[in-house]
Length: 323
Image (cartoon, rainbow, N blue to C red):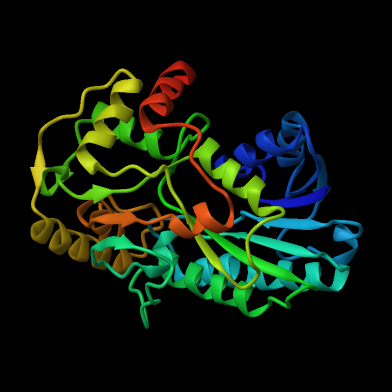
């Protein structure tokens, strides 16, 4: 099968390519020579274009598009989130339809439902919020809506996968940032890390995406997780331990942390500081709120069953290593 992937040089994209490269012919969007080199190293053919310049000619003969590119930041101007997450998705969709692509798999997130509330035992029937205060959540929601609306049964099957908290070897963002906070003695729990969460190991998500190449209904969304529920404290402590760090005990209460984040974000905006603030409302809420997800639909319609447990994933994370 000929597959075109956006965001292939990122953590999720690399994981998808590693899973699919032996059985499929992979083409991947590359915005630079450096990105193109990464694509070739993973086993794909680089297509020099970006979300602004992708064209139907780039997708000739492609059977499936996997759209994993996104602007994933806890902080930034709204227009940047909108341009990449919404307009970028719109352009890839249009190019795919014009090129005659038959299937479009959108990599979404549970954050499309998040406005700072607990998400307890939710499934795909949980409604979108009318508005989220978080640019990432709001723009990923609008992007997903575009994908689902583009579905044409039997002609252009467009569906969305929603992994929760993708983690594992190859991630140079979450674990690396946690280690830096610990090393600089700036790490703090929120509400002692008592929130409950679902997670999604990269190999499990890659499996779900592979299944979605042929299974799943266009116009539908599917949550993907490790099918385990853990506390934020337990999970992050295990991640840090895999990197040779011990999680500290310092803690901030949710209310205080939220007020502090509001104040700091306000100062950053007034002063026009581009660097990420030390604390944001989104990061506080993401750590403090429950987020437990049901995956019954993915099991039934995709045939999905996680291959890697959290315990085994932590072993692999330790073997990979972060310094």
